[in-house]
Image (tube, rainbow, N blue to C red; front, side):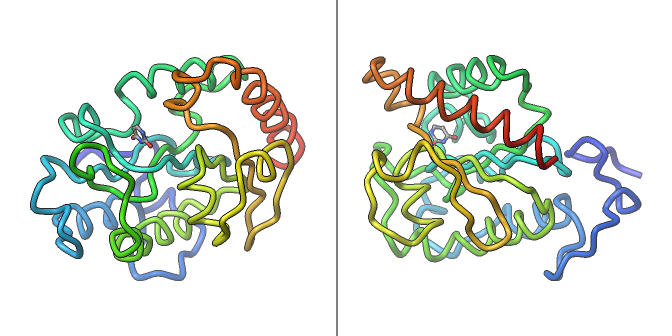
Length: 205
Ligand code: URA
């Protein structure tokens, strides 16, 4: 049998029944990686599916792959990714303890914000990822992720710093690492948010 892309993700280890037709992340990846549902497929180098623990209690969701992510086919591996690694480390997690992915799986040219039609085309992949992983907690990085998932237009200030119940998930919103690189003053808010994340994880997972 081929080694799985995802640690512990053999069909046998996927005991939780999934309501979608893909039985595990490997199968979903195989069925999504050649996606052409939007025009970003024409300019991408790689479909950036996401990576980490397929049975994670926490799924970390960013906005969209950047240049480095597009090149490597992996999420959060550029400058923002290095900062995300440090943020996770600060609360005792490695990348392999969580699952990391994005709202959209292909890089928008010039790193522009994803267009609504691109988000709409891509969201089913994320929905299916969540149905398979069944995390307890979502950590949403930045406004695009937060406003898309929560289907609102609220500001960071009103979304961060609390736990929001959405569908079957407990959602925590914090600043996107790229925003923290531009505005280091926001790092203390992010620190409060991820301490809350750790505390909540220890309670529910
Ligand atoms: N920014 C994101 O939102 N996602 C990535 O994967 C990298 C940078």
